[in-house]
Image 1 (cartoon, rainbow, N blue to C red):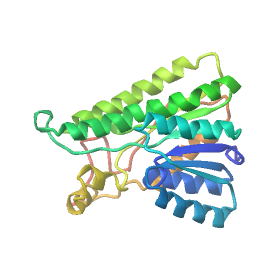
Image 2 (image 1 turned 60 degrees about the vertical axis):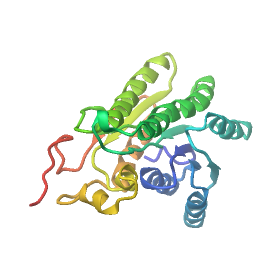
Image 3 (image 1 turned 180 degrees about the horizontal axis):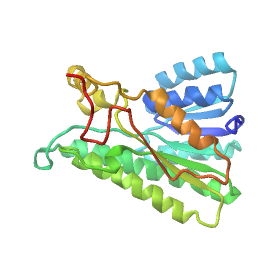
Image 4 (image 1 turned 180 degrees about the vertical axis):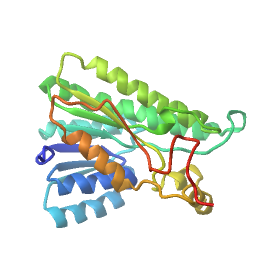
Length: 257
């Protein structure tokens, strides 16, 4: 059964990777979309493709989730147009750098904390009250296996994803007494722009992350998110961990020699 059709789904970080894949998947399922990202040109290209292919409504806003004022402006515009999201997908997130804590770059730390934690908080604070007021909605946070198990030199990124996990559990408690659902989908290795961003554009180093095994694709993760969102309203997936078969935990990956 398709329970996604006709819903308004707000996706942050929608211009690439998992966010872009979810936009395509939800558009194919008949959803109305609100897409936020920093790169408006890429959003416009994606929106044109989706309107062409599926004919649905796609609203766009150039939003950096680190900018609290911009987040609230974009959310207020949606609400003023009578477009309270049925689903909020807090997808915007990144890793920046990979180094020991005593050798780390504080600019990398700020970028991860401001995006992965504060950005998620800003967007949720701007949208969730409207869901609670009308007693309908679903917040899906994109976490990570890095929020379940630390790995060498992951330190601050791990901390932010452990934080997302704590926020998901905390939000779930905070909306007790309402029918609002709170979920997290936590991927392992997914081949997107993630490693390009982490290594500041070093394509060779980024490609090496995925060598010797078959990682997840953004579409694989979008399928899992669609499953979570499509469930009946009395069913909530609090946390779904999804990994490629070759990955057993954050350390153990079956790589071909």
